[in-house]
Image (tube, rainbow, N blue to C red; front, side, top):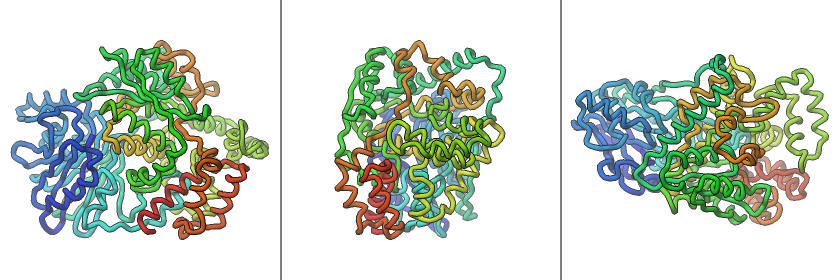
Length: 612
Protein backbone atom coordinates (compact mmCIF):
# COMPACT_ATOMS: atom_id res chain seq x y z
CA UNK A 1 0.00 0.00 0.00
CA UNK A 2 1.22 3.50 -0.72
CA UNK A 3 0.33 7.15 -1.08
CA UNK A 4 0.50 8.95 -4.41
CA UNK A 5 0.46 12.60 -5.42
CA UNK A 6 1.37 14.84 -8.31
CA UNK A 7 0.72 17.80 -10.57
CA UNK A 8 0.43 18.56 -14.26
CA UNK A 9 0.93 22.18 -15.28
CA UNK A 10 -0.74 23.83 -18.26
CA UNK A 11 1.71 26.73 -18.55
CA UNK A 12 5.18 25.69 -17.44
CA UNK A 13 7.35 23.04 -15.84
CA UNK A 14 6.46 21.15 -12.69
CA UNK A 15 8.82 20.94 -9.73
CA UNK A 16 9.96 17.97 -7.65
CA UNK A 17 9.65 20.13 -4.56
CA UNK A 18 5.92 20.76 -4.88
CA UNK A 19 5.25 17.01 -5.09
CA UNK A 20 7.65 16.26 -2.24
CA UNK A 21 5.60 18.67 -0.15
CA UNK A 22 2.50 16.65 -0.99
CA UNK A 23 4.15 13.33 -0.22
CA UNK A 24 5.21 14.46 3.24
CA UNK A 25 1.51 14.54 4.20
CA UNK A 26 1.22 10.87 3.19
CA UNK A 27 4.16 9.38 5.11
CA UNK A 28 1.78 7.21 7.12
CA UNK A 29 0.63 5.46 3.93
CA UNK A 30 4.14 4.55 2.84
CA UNK A 31 6.89 4.93 5.44
CA UNK A 32 9.48 2.72 3.73
CA UNK A 33 10.59 4.82 0.73
CA UNK A 34 9.51 7.58 -1.63
CA UNK A 35 10.35 8.97 -5.05
CA UNK A 36 9.26 11.46 -7.73
CA UNK A 37 9.19 11.05 -11.49
CA UNK A 38 9.37 14.42 -13.27
CA UNK A 39 9.13 15.22 -16.95
CA UNK A 40 8.61 18.80 -18.03
CA UNK A 41 5.11 19.91 -17.07
CA UNK A 42 4.37 16.80 -15.00
CA UNK A 43 5.66 15.48 -11.68
CA UNK A 44 4.19 12.41 -9.98
CA UNK A 45 5.35 10.82 -6.75
CA UNK A 46 4.79 7.92 -4.41
CA UNK A 47 5.35 6.95 -0.78
CA UNK A 48 5.86 3.18 -0.51
CA UNK A 49 4.83 0.55 2.02
CA UNK A 50 6.84 -2.51 0.97
CA UNK A 51 4.63 -5.58 0.53
CA UNK A 52 5.95 -7.39 -2.57
CA UNK A 53 9.40 -7.09 -4.17
CA UNK A 54 11.06 -5.63 -1.10
CA UNK A 55 14.43 -5.05 -2.84
CA UNK A 56 13.86 -3.63 -6.34
CA UNK A 57 10.41 -2.04 -6.18
CA UNK A 58 11.09 1.38 -4.65
CA UNK A 59 9.83 4.46 -6.54
CA UNK A 60 10.14 6.17 -8.89
CA UNK A 61 9.14 3.47 -11.38
CA UNK A 62 9.40 4.16 -15.12
CA UNK A 63 9.99 2.41 -18.43
CA UNK A 64 13.68 2.00 -19.41
CA UNK A 65 13.61 5.10 -21.64
CA UNK A 66 11.85 7.17 -18.97
CA UNK A 67 8.96 8.06 -21.25
CA UNK A 68 6.33 6.58 -18.94
CA UNK A 69 6.36 7.00 -15.16
CA UNK A 70 3.94 5.47 -12.65
CA UNK A 71 2.84 6.38 -9.12
CA UNK A 72 0.85 3.47 -7.73
CA UNK A 73 -1.22 2.65 -4.62
CA UNK A 74 -2.68 -0.82 -4.18
CA UNK A 75 -2.12 -4.44 -5.12
CA UNK A 76 -2.48 -6.09 -8.53
CA UNK A 77 -3.21 -9.78 -7.95
CA UNK A 78 -2.64 -10.88 -11.55
CA UNK A 79 0.60 -8.95 -11.98
CA UNK A 80 2.75 -12.09 -12.28
CA UNK A 81 0.78 -13.34 -15.31
CA UNK A 82 0.83 -9.88 -16.88
CA UNK A 83 4.57 -9.64 -16.25
CA UNK A 84 5.22 -12.95 -18.03
CA UNK A 85 3.11 -11.75 -20.95
CA UNK A 86 5.15 -8.54 -21.22
CA UNK A 87 8.47 -10.40 -21.00
CA UNK A 88 7.33 -12.72 -23.79
CA UNK A 89 6.64 -9.65 -25.93
CA UNK A 90 10.18 -8.39 -25.41
CA UNK A 91 9.66 -5.81 -22.68
CA UNK A 92 12.57 -5.33 -20.28
CA UNK A 93 11.40 -5.21 -16.65
CA UNK A 94 13.92 -4.45 -13.95
CA UNK A 95 11.68 -5.11 -10.91
CA UNK A 96 9.71 -8.09 -9.64
CA UNK A 97 6.61 -6.15 -8.52
CA UNK A 98 3.32 -4.89 -9.94
CA UNK A 99 3.95 -1.15 -10.43
CA UNK A 100 6.29 -1.60 -13.38
CA UNK A 101 3.70 -3.82 -15.09
CA UNK A 102 1.37 -0.81 -15.28
CA UNK A 103 4.10 1.28 -16.91
CA UNK A 104 4.73 -1.28 -19.66
CA UNK A 105 1.03 -1.97 -20.25
CA UNK A 106 0.63 1.77 -20.75
CA UNK A 107 3.20 1.69 -23.57
CA UNK A 108 0.97 -0.44 -25.76
CA UNK A 109 -2.62 0.16 -24.58
CA UNK A 110 -5.17 2.93 -24.17
CA UNK A 111 -5.88 4.25 -20.68
CA UNK A 112 -9.14 2.39 -20.09
CA UNK A 113 -7.72 -0.84 -21.51
CA UNK A 114 -4.86 -0.83 -19.00
CA UNK A 115 -7.23 -0.52 -16.04
CA UNK A 116 -9.47 -3.23 -17.46
CA UNK A 117 -6.55 -5.70 -17.51
CA UNK A 118 -5.82 -5.22 -13.80
CA UNK A 119 -7.30 -7.49 -11.13
CA UNK A 120 -6.89 -5.81 -7.79
CA UNK A 121 -7.38 -2.69 -5.72
CA UNK A 122 -5.64 0.35 -7.08
CA UNK A 123 -5.31 4.05 -7.64
CA UNK A 124 -2.51 5.22 -9.90
CA UNK A 125 -1.16 8.05 -11.94
CA UNK A 126 0.67 7.46 -15.23
CA UNK A 127 2.54 10.25 -17.02
CA UNK A 128 3.04 9.38 -20.69
CA UNK A 129 5.55 11.80 -22.25
CA UNK A 130 4.99 10.50 -25.79
CA UNK A 131 1.23 11.03 -25.68
CA UNK A 132 1.61 14.12 -23.48
CA UNK A 133 -1.04 13.06 -21.00
CA UNK A 134 -1.62 12.12 -17.37
CA UNK A 135 -3.90 9.18 -16.63
CA UNK A 136 -5.45 8.77 -13.19
CA UNK A 137 -7.26 5.47 -12.59
CA UNK A 138 -9.27 3.96 -9.76
CA UNK A 139 -10.30 0.35 -9.16
CA UNK A 140 -13.75 -1.01 -9.86
CA UNK A 141 -15.33 -0.61 -6.41
CA UNK A 142 -13.23 2.36 -5.30
CA UNK A 143 -11.25 0.53 -2.62
CA UNK A 144 -8.32 2.89 -3.02
CA UNK A 145 -8.97 6.65 -2.76
CA UNK A 146 -7.96 9.23 -5.35
CA UNK A 147 -8.73 12.97 -5.28
CA UNK A 148 -8.01 15.78 -7.72
CA UNK A 149 -8.33 19.53 -8.13
CA UNK A 150 -8.51 21.34 -11.45
CA UNK A 151 -7.48 24.97 -11.62
CA UNK A 152 -6.71 27.46 -14.39
CA UNK A 153 -3.00 26.57 -14.39
CA UNK A 154 -2.81 22.95 -13.23
CA UNK A 155 -4.39 19.69 -12.16
CA UNK A 156 -3.29 18.37 -8.75
CA UNK A 157 -4.00 14.88 -7.40
CA UNK A 158 -3.39 12.79 -4.29
CA UNK A 159 -4.42 9.69 -2.36
CA UNK A 160 -5.90 11.88 0.36
CA UNK A 161 -7.39 15.36 0.39
CA UNK A 162 -4.56 16.61 2.61
CA UNK A 163 -2.08 15.81 -0.17
CA UNK A 164 -4.09 17.88 -2.65
CA UNK A 165 -4.36 20.76 -0.18
CA UNK A 166 -0.59 20.62 0.40
CA UNK A 167 0.05 21.84 -3.15
CA UNK A 168 0.57 25.62 -3.32
CA UNK A 169 -1.90 26.03 -6.20
CA UNK A 170 -4.83 24.73 -4.12
CA UNK A 171 -6.79 26.77 -1.59
CA UNK A 172 -8.82 25.28 1.25
CA UNK A 173 -12.36 26.67 0.97
CA UNK A 174 -15.40 25.19 2.68
CA UNK A 175 -18.19 23.97 0.40
CA UNK A 176 -21.14 24.79 2.66
CA UNK A 177 -23.58 23.23 0.20
CA UNK A 178 -22.50 19.71 1.18
CA UNK A 179 -23.39 20.04 4.88
CA UNK A 180 -27.07 18.98 4.47
CA UNK A 181 -26.00 15.91 2.47
CA UNK A 182 -23.40 15.02 5.10
CA UNK A 183 -26.00 15.12 7.87
CA UNK A 184 -28.27 12.74 5.94
CA UNK A 185 -25.67 10.28 4.71
CA UNK A 186 -22.86 10.57 7.25
CA UNK A 187 -20.50 11.30 4.35
CA UNK A 188 -20.35 13.51 1.27
CA UNK A 189 -21.43 11.46 -1.77
CA UNK A 190 -18.86 10.97 -4.55
CA UNK A 191 -17.54 13.01 -6.29
CA UNK A 192 -18.04 16.01 -3.95
CA UNK A 193 -16.01 16.75 -0.81
CA UNK A 194 -16.15 19.37 1.95
CA UNK A 195 -13.64 21.43 -0.05
CA UNK A 196 -14.66 23.59 -2.98
CA UNK A 197 -13.16 22.28 -6.21
CA UNK A 198 -11.67 19.07 -4.80
CA UNK A 199 -13.32 15.99 -6.28
CA UNK A 200 -12.98 12.25 -5.97
CA UNK A 201 -12.15 10.26 -9.11
CA UNK A 202 -15.18 7.95 -9.60
CA UNK A 203 -14.59 4.22 -9.18
CA UNK A 204 -14.09 2.09 -12.30
CA UNK A 205 -12.97 5.20 -14.18
CA UNK A 206 -9.92 6.82 -15.68
CA UNK A 207 -9.38 10.56 -15.66
CA UNK A 208 -7.25 11.81 -18.56
CA UNK A 209 -5.46 15.16 -18.45
CA UNK A 210 -3.98 16.58 -21.68
CA UNK A 211 -2.11 19.73 -20.65
CA UNK A 212 -1.48 21.04 -24.15
CA UNK A 213 -5.22 21.16 -24.81
CA UNK A 214 -6.03 22.03 -21.17
CA UNK A 215 -8.41 19.10 -21.36
CA UNK A 216 -9.69 16.95 -18.49
CA UNK A 217 -12.11 14.11 -19.13
CA UNK A 218 -13.38 11.02 -17.28
CA UNK A 219 -13.98 7.67 -18.97
CA UNK A 220 -15.65 4.70 -17.19
CA UNK A 221 -14.12 1.31 -17.96
CA UNK A 222 -16.35 -1.14 -16.03
CA UNK A 223 -19.82 -1.55 -14.56
CA UNK A 224 -21.71 -4.23 -12.70
CA UNK A 225 -23.32 -6.91 -14.90
CA UNK A 226 -27.03 -7.01 -15.59
CA UNK A 227 -28.91 -8.41 -12.57
CA UNK A 228 -30.38 -11.89 -12.27
CA UNK A 229 -29.13 -13.15 -15.64
CA UNK A 230 -27.66 -16.43 -14.35
CA UNK A 231 -31.03 -18.15 -14.01
CA UNK A 232 -29.94 -21.55 -15.34
CA UNK A 233 -27.83 -22.29 -12.24
CA UNK A 234 -29.47 -24.19 -9.40
CA UNK A 235 -29.05 -23.03 -5.81
CA UNK A 236 -26.61 -25.86 -5.00
CA UNK A 237 -24.60 -25.14 -8.13
CA UNK A 238 -24.51 -21.46 -7.20
CA UNK A 239 -23.25 -22.30 -3.69
CA UNK A 240 -20.47 -24.43 -5.20
CA UNK A 241 -19.50 -21.60 -7.55
CA UNK A 242 -19.45 -19.09 -4.68
CA UNK A 243 -17.21 -21.40 -2.66
CA UNK A 244 -14.85 -21.85 -5.62
CA UNK A 245 -14.62 -18.12 -6.37
CA UNK A 246 -14.20 -17.15 -2.70
CA UNK A 247 -11.47 -19.72 -2.11
CA UNK A 248 -9.59 -18.49 -5.18
CA UNK A 249 -10.03 -14.90 -4.02
CA UNK A 250 -8.53 -15.68 -0.61
CA UNK A 251 -5.59 -17.60 -2.10
CA UNK A 252 -4.49 -14.80 -4.39
CA UNK A 253 -4.64 -12.32 -1.49
CA UNK A 254 -2.18 -14.41 0.52
CA UNK A 255 0.71 -13.41 -1.76
CA UNK A 256 3.02 -11.13 0.25
CA UNK A 257 6.66 -10.86 1.27
CA UNK A 258 5.70 -9.58 4.74
CA UNK A 259 3.71 -11.01 7.72
CA UNK A 260 -0.02 -11.45 7.06
CA UNK A 261 -3.10 -11.91 9.27
CA UNK A 262 -6.86 -11.31 9.35
CA UNK A 263 -9.56 -9.26 11.05
CA UNK A 264 -12.02 -11.56 12.82
CA UNK A 265 -15.46 -10.57 14.13
CA UNK A 266 -18.36 -12.76 15.15
CA UNK A 267 -19.85 -12.77 11.65
CA UNK A 268 -19.92 -15.35 8.90
CA UNK A 269 -17.97 -13.18 6.42
CA UNK A 270 -14.71 -12.87 8.33
CA UNK A 271 -15.11 -16.41 9.71
CA UNK A 272 -15.30 -17.80 6.17
CA UNK A 273 -12.26 -15.78 5.07
CA UNK A 274 -10.21 -16.97 8.05
CA UNK A 275 -11.25 -20.59 7.54
CA UNK A 276 -10.23 -20.44 3.86
CA UNK A 277 -6.95 -18.80 4.85
CA UNK A 278 -6.31 -21.68 7.25
CA UNK A 279 -7.00 -24.18 4.46
CA UNK A 280 -4.50 -22.46 2.15
CA UNK A 281 -1.78 -21.77 4.73
CA UNK A 282 0.89 -24.07 6.11
CA UNK A 283 1.23 -22.07 9.33
CA UNK A 284 -1.49 -20.96 11.81
CA UNK A 285 -3.38 -17.82 10.73
CA UNK A 286 -2.95 -14.71 12.88
CA UNK A 287 -6.37 -13.25 13.79
CA UNK A 288 -7.31 -9.99 15.55
CA UNK A 289 -10.55 -8.88 17.23
CA UNK A 290 -11.94 -5.75 18.92
CA UNK A 291 -14.50 -5.96 21.75
CA UNK A 292 -16.44 -3.89 24.31
CA UNK A 293 -17.48 -4.29 27.93
CA UNK A 294 -21.08 -3.80 26.77
CA UNK A 295 -22.27 -7.32 25.79
CA UNK A 296 -24.69 -5.90 23.20
CA UNK A 297 -21.70 -4.81 21.12
CA UNK A 298 -19.15 -7.45 22.07
CA UNK A 299 -18.27 -10.31 19.71
CA UNK A 300 -15.04 -11.47 21.33
CA UNK A 301 -16.40 -14.81 22.50
CA UNK A 302 -17.71 -15.73 19.05
CA UNK A 303 -14.50 -14.60 17.36
CA UNK A 304 -12.46 -16.67 19.79
CA UNK A 305 -14.66 -19.69 19.00
CA UNK A 306 -13.93 -19.30 15.28
CA UNK A 307 -10.21 -18.81 15.93
CA UNK A 308 -10.09 -22.00 17.98
CA UNK A 309 -12.10 -23.85 15.32
CA UNK A 310 -9.49 -23.12 12.62
CA UNK A 311 -6.45 -23.26 14.91
CA UNK A 312 -5.61 -19.56 14.58
CA UNK A 313 -3.22 -17.59 16.75
CA UNK A 314 -5.70 -15.09 18.18
CA UNK A 315 -5.31 -11.59 19.72
CA UNK A 316 -8.05 -9.32 21.08
CA UNK A 317 -8.46 -5.83 22.55
CA UNK A 318 -11.25 -4.14 24.53
CA UNK A 319 -12.22 -0.57 23.52
CA UNK A 320 -13.17 1.74 26.40
CA UNK A 321 -15.19 4.99 26.29
CA UNK A 322 -12.05 7.16 26.26
CA UNK A 323 -11.77 6.08 22.63
CA UNK A 324 -13.72 9.26 21.89
CA UNK A 325 -10.38 11.05 22.34
CA UNK A 326 -9.61 9.66 18.91
CA UNK A 327 -11.98 12.06 17.21
CA UNK A 328 -9.35 14.65 16.24
CA UNK A 329 -7.02 11.98 14.87
CA UNK A 330 -9.87 10.42 12.90
CA UNK A 331 -10.90 13.74 11.36
CA UNK A 332 -7.25 14.37 10.48
CA UNK A 333 -6.94 11.08 8.62
CA UNK A 334 -10.35 11.30 6.94
CA UNK A 335 -9.70 14.98 6.04
CA UNK A 336 -13.38 15.75 6.52
CA UNK A 337 -16.25 14.81 8.84
CA UNK A 338 -17.20 11.12 8.89
CA UNK A 339 -20.46 10.06 10.49
CA UNK A 340 -19.79 6.34 10.94
CA UNK A 341 -18.75 5.83 14.56
CA UNK A 342 -17.50 2.30 13.85
CA UNK A 343 -14.35 4.10 12.71
CA UNK A 344 -13.44 4.03 16.44
CA UNK A 345 -13.12 0.23 16.76
CA UNK A 346 -11.70 0.01 13.24
CA UNK A 347 -8.92 2.39 14.27
CA UNK A 348 -8.03 0.29 17.30
CA UNK A 349 -8.33 -2.94 15.35
CA UNK A 350 -5.89 -1.61 12.75
CA UNK A 351 -3.54 -0.36 15.46
CA UNK A 352 -3.60 -3.73 17.22
CA UNK A 353 -3.10 -5.68 13.99
CA UNK A 354 -0.30 -3.50 12.63
CA UNK A 355 1.82 -4.28 15.67
CA UNK A 356 2.01 -7.90 14.48
CA UNK A 357 1.53 -8.00 10.67
CA UNK A 358 1.74 -5.71 7.64
CA UNK A 359 -1.19 -7.15 5.64
CA UNK A 360 -4.63 -8.18 6.93
CA UNK A 361 -7.57 -9.81 5.17
CA UNK A 362 -11.07 -8.69 6.14
CA UNK A 363 -14.66 -9.79 5.60
CA UNK A 364 -15.68 -6.43 4.13
CA UNK A 365 -18.04 -6.75 1.18
CA UNK A 366 -19.94 -9.86 2.25
CA UNK A 367 -23.01 -7.85 3.22
CA UNK A 368 -22.80 -5.89 -0.04
CA UNK A 369 -22.56 -8.94 -2.30
CA UNK A 370 -24.86 -11.34 -0.44
CA UNK A 371 -27.52 -8.98 0.99
CA UNK A 372 -26.44 -9.22 4.62
CA UNK A 373 -27.98 -6.02 5.95
CA UNK A 374 -31.45 -6.14 7.48
CA UNK A 375 -32.35 -3.05 5.46
CA UNK A 376 -32.32 -5.16 2.29
CA UNK A 377 -35.03 -7.44 3.64
CA UNK A 378 -36.89 -4.38 4.89
CA UNK A 379 -36.90 -3.00 1.36
CA UNK A 380 -38.24 -6.29 0.02
CA UNK A 381 -41.02 -6.26 2.63
CA UNK A 382 -41.87 -2.65 1.81
CA UNK A 383 -42.16 -3.48 -1.89
CA UNK A 384 -44.47 -6.41 -1.17
CA UNK A 385 -46.74 -4.36 1.08
CA UNK A 386 -47.51 -1.98 -1.74
CA UNK A 387 -50.65 0.08 -0.96
CA UNK A 388 -50.79 -1.36 2.59
CA UNK A 389 -47.50 0.27 3.52
CA UNK A 390 -48.95 3.60 4.76
CA UNK A 391 -51.34 1.81 7.13
CA UNK A 392 -48.50 -0.31 8.55
CA UNK A 393 -46.48 2.87 8.96
CA UNK A 394 -49.19 4.45 11.12
CA UNK A 395 -49.31 1.41 13.42
CA UNK A 396 -45.55 1.01 13.86
CA UNK A 397 -45.07 4.69 14.68
CA UNK A 398 -46.89 4.02 17.95
CA UNK A 399 -44.20 1.56 19.10
CA UNK A 400 -41.58 2.62 21.70
CA UNK A 401 -38.66 4.70 20.41
CA UNK A 402 -36.24 2.74 22.60
CA UNK A 403 -35.69 -0.90 23.51
CA UNK A 404 -36.30 -4.09 21.56
CA UNK A 405 -39.09 -2.66 19.39
CA UNK A 406 -37.20 0.49 18.36
CA UNK A 407 -35.81 -1.10 15.20
CA UNK A 408 -39.29 -2.20 14.11
CA UNK A 409 -40.57 1.30 14.78
CA UNK A 410 -37.71 2.80 12.74
CA UNK A 411 -38.53 0.45 9.87
CA UNK A 412 -42.27 0.93 9.90
CA UNK A 413 -42.31 4.67 10.50
CA UNK A 414 -40.88 5.27 7.01
CA UNK A 415 -43.04 2.84 5.07
CA UNK A 416 -45.27 5.66 3.88
CA UNK A 417 -42.33 6.87 1.78
CA UNK A 418 -41.46 5.10 -1.49
CA UNK A 419 -38.16 3.38 -2.15
CA UNK A 420 -35.42 4.57 -2.25
CA UNK A 421 -36.48 7.40 0.13
CA UNK A 422 -37.48 4.95 2.85
CA UNK A 423 -34.20 3.07 2.38
CA UNK A 424 -32.22 6.28 2.91
CA UNK A 425 -34.18 6.96 6.09
CA UNK A 426 -33.17 3.51 7.40
CA UNK A 427 -29.47 3.96 6.64
CA UNK A 428 -29.14 7.72 7.16
CA UNK A 429 -27.34 9.07 10.22
CA UNK A 430 -29.73 11.97 10.77
CA UNK A 431 -33.49 11.56 10.18
CA UNK A 432 -34.78 13.57 7.24
CA UNK A 433 -36.86 15.93 9.40
CA UNK A 434 -33.98 16.69 11.76
CA UNK A 435 -31.45 17.13 8.94
CA UNK A 436 -33.74 19.55 7.12
CA UNK A 437 -34.43 21.52 10.30
CA UNK A 438 -30.72 21.70 11.17
CA UNK A 439 -29.25 22.65 7.81
CA UNK A 440 -32.02 23.25 5.29
CA UNK A 441 -32.67 21.44 2.03
CA UNK A 442 -30.13 18.98 0.60
CA UNK A 443 -29.05 20.46 -2.71
CA UNK A 444 -27.36 17.48 -4.35
CA UNK A 445 -27.17 14.38 -2.10
CA UNK A 446 -30.78 13.32 -2.56
CA UNK A 447 -30.62 13.91 -6.31
CA UNK A 448 -27.46 11.79 -6.48
CA UNK A 449 -29.15 9.02 -4.49
CA UNK A 450 -32.21 9.05 -6.74
CA UNK A 451 -30.07 9.06 -9.89
CA UNK A 452 -28.19 5.95 -8.71
CA UNK A 453 -31.52 4.24 -7.96
CA UNK A 454 -32.89 5.07 -11.40
CA UNK A 455 -29.70 3.84 -13.06
CA UNK A 456 -30.25 0.47 -11.35
CA UNK A 457 -33.66 -0.01 -12.97
CA UNK A 458 -34.24 -3.35 -14.64
CA UNK A 459 -33.81 -5.62 -11.66
CA UNK A 460 -36.12 -6.56 -8.82
CA UNK A 461 -36.16 -4.63 -5.54
CA UNK A 462 -33.26 -6.48 -3.93
CA UNK A 463 -31.06 -6.21 -7.02
CA UNK A 464 -31.66 -2.47 -7.18
CA UNK A 465 -30.95 -2.01 -3.47
CA UNK A 466 -27.69 -3.96 -3.76
CA UNK A 467 -26.56 -1.76 -6.63
CA UNK A 468 -27.62 1.39 -4.81
CA UNK A 469 -25.70 0.26 -1.74
CA UNK A 470 -22.56 -0.50 -3.79
CA UNK A 471 -22.59 2.96 -5.35
CA UNK A 472 -23.25 4.83 -2.09
CA UNK A 473 -22.62 3.24 1.32
CA UNK A 474 -19.91 0.81 0.16
CA UNK A 475 -18.09 3.46 -1.86
CA UNK A 476 -18.31 6.41 0.51
CA UNK A 477 -18.56 4.83 3.97
CA UNK A 478 -17.29 1.25 4.31
CA UNK A 479 -14.27 1.46 1.99
CA UNK A 480 -12.96 4.87 3.20
CA UNK A 481 -13.33 3.69 6.79
CA UNK A 482 -11.18 0.62 6.12
CA UNK A 483 -8.63 2.54 4.06
CA UNK A 484 -8.08 5.54 6.36
CA UNK A 485 -7.97 3.64 9.65
CA UNK A 486 -5.63 0.95 8.29
CA UNK A 487 -3.30 3.26 6.35
CA UNK A 488 -2.98 5.53 9.39
CA UNK A 489 -1.07 2.57 10.83
CA UNK A 490 0.73 1.54 7.60
CA UNK A 491 -1.42 -1.61 7.44
CA UNK A 492 -2.67 -2.99 4.13
CA UNK A 493 -6.19 -4.46 4.23
CA UNK A 494 -7.39 -6.83 1.50
CA UNK A 495 -11.07 -7.74 1.03
CA UNK A 496 -11.59 -11.15 -0.66
CA UNK A 497 -15.38 -10.70 -0.61
CA UNK A 498 -14.97 -7.77 -3.03
CA UNK A 499 -13.08 -9.81 -5.61
CA UNK A 500 -14.19 -8.86 -9.12
CA UNK A 501 -14.80 -12.45 -10.29
CA UNK A 502 -16.87 -13.18 -7.18
CA UNK A 503 -18.84 -9.94 -7.61
CA UNK A 504 -19.54 -10.67 -11.27
CA UNK A 505 -21.01 -14.00 -10.18
CA UNK A 506 -23.09 -12.82 -7.23
CA UNK A 507 -24.62 -9.82 -8.97
CA UNK A 508 -25.95 -12.09 -11.73
CA UNK A 509 -27.43 -14.74 -9.41
CA UNK A 510 -31.18 -14.67 -8.75
CA UNK A 511 -31.92 -12.39 -5.82
CA UNK A 512 -33.69 -15.23 -3.97
CA UNK A 513 -30.29 -16.95 -3.64
CA UNK A 514 -29.05 -13.99 -1.60
CA UNK A 515 -31.95 -13.03 0.66
CA UNK A 516 -35.50 -14.20 1.33
CA UNK A 517 -38.14 -13.42 3.93
CA UNK A 518 -36.55 -16.18 6.05
CA UNK A 519 -32.91 -15.25 5.90
CA UNK A 520 -29.98 -13.29 4.54
CA UNK A 521 -26.77 -14.40 2.79
CA UNK A 522 -28.41 -17.73 2.09
CA UNK A 523 -26.11 -18.81 -0.75
CA UNK A 524 -22.98 -17.72 1.14
CA UNK A 525 -24.01 -19.66 4.24
CA UNK A 526 -24.61 -22.72 2.09
CA UNK A 527 -21.23 -22.27 0.42
CA UNK A 528 -19.25 -22.22 3.70
CA UNK A 529 -21.40 -24.33 6.04
CA UNK A 530 -18.64 -26.94 6.43
CA UNK A 531 -16.05 -24.28 7.29
CA UNK A 532 -17.83 -22.21 9.94
CA UNK A 533 -19.21 -23.38 13.32
CA UNK A 534 -23.00 -23.74 13.29
CA UNK A 535 -23.54 -21.17 16.02
CA UNK A 536 -21.64 -18.58 13.96
CA UNK A 537 -23.37 -19.52 10.74
CA UNK A 538 -26.80 -18.67 12.14
CA UNK A 539 -26.04 -15.80 14.53
CA UNK A 540 -28.04 -12.60 13.95
CA UNK A 541 -25.94 -9.73 12.61
CA UNK A 542 -24.58 -7.33 15.24
CA UNK A 543 -22.61 -4.95 13.11
CA UNK A 544 -19.37 -3.24 14.06
CA UNK A 545 -20.89 -0.54 16.24
CA UNK A 546 -20.10 1.22 19.48
CA UNK A 547 -22.40 1.96 22.45
CA UNK A 548 -22.89 5.64 21.63
CA UNK A 549 -26.28 5.84 23.33
CA UNK A 550 -24.82 5.12 26.77
CA UNK A 551 -21.48 6.85 26.18
CA UNK A 552 -23.09 10.17 25.26
CA UNK A 553 -25.58 10.08 28.16
CA UNK A 554 -23.09 8.90 30.78
CA UNK A 555 -19.32 8.63 30.29
CA UNK A 556 -19.00 11.34 27.65
CA UNK A 557 -21.94 13.64 28.43
CA UNK A 558 -19.67 16.47 29.60
CA UNK A 559 -17.58 16.23 26.45
CA UNK A 560 -20.67 16.46 24.24
CA UNK A 561 -21.98 19.49 26.12
CA UNK A 562 -18.61 21.22 25.81
CA UNK A 563 -18.14 20.54 22.09
CA UNK A 564 -21.69 21.22 20.93
CA UNK A 565 -22.61 23.95 23.42
CA UNK A 566 -23.22 27.66 22.76
CA UNK A 567 -19.68 28.29 21.41
CA UNK A 568 -19.79 25.45 18.87
CA UNK A 569 -18.63 26.24 15.34
CA UNK A 570 -21.47 24.12 13.98
CA UNK A 571 -23.92 26.75 15.20
CA UNK A 572 -22.64 29.11 12.50
CA UNK A 573 -23.93 26.65 9.89
CA UNK A 574 -26.82 24.86 11.70
CA UNK A 575 -29.87 26.00 13.65
CA UNK A 576 -28.92 26.13 17.32
CA UNK A 577 -32.44 25.54 18.66
CA UNK A 578 -32.75 22.29 16.72
CA UNK A 579 -29.31 21.19 17.92
CA UNK A 580 -30.32 21.93 21.52
CA UNK A 581 -33.50 19.88 21.11
CA UNK A 582 -31.58 16.86 19.79
CA UNK A 583 -29.09 17.01 22.67
CA UNK A 584 -31.90 17.37 25.23
CA UNK A 585 -33.85 14.43 23.82
CA UNK A 586 -30.79 12.21 24.07
CA UNK A 587 -29.86 13.44 27.55
CA UNK A 588 -33.35 12.61 28.84
CA UNK A 589 -33.19 9.16 27.26
CA UNK A 590 -36.40 9.70 25.28
CA UNK A 591 -34.75 8.91 21.94
CA UNK A 592 -31.37 7.45 21.01
CA UNK A 593 -29.63 10.29 19.17
CA UNK A 594 -26.15 8.76 19.46
CA UNK A 595 -25.48 8.52 15.73
CA UNK A 596 -26.67 12.08 15.10
CA UNK A 597 -24.47 13.40 17.90
CA UNK A 598 -21.42 11.55 16.58
CA UNK A 599 -21.96 13.05 13.12
CA UNK A 600 -22.27 16.50 14.68
CA UNK A 601 -19.14 16.00 16.79
CA UNK A 602 -16.97 15.08 13.82
CA UNK A 603 -18.37 18.08 11.95
CA UNK A 604 -17.55 20.31 14.92
CA UNK A 605 -13.96 19.06 15.21
CA UNK A 606 -13.46 19.53 11.47
CA UNK A 607 -14.83 23.09 11.46
CA UNK A 608 -12.76 24.09 14.50
CA UNK A 609 -9.56 22.70 13.01
CA UNK A 610 -10.11 24.77 9.85
CA UNK A 611 -11.29 27.90 11.66
CA UNK A 612 -14.67 27.70 9.95
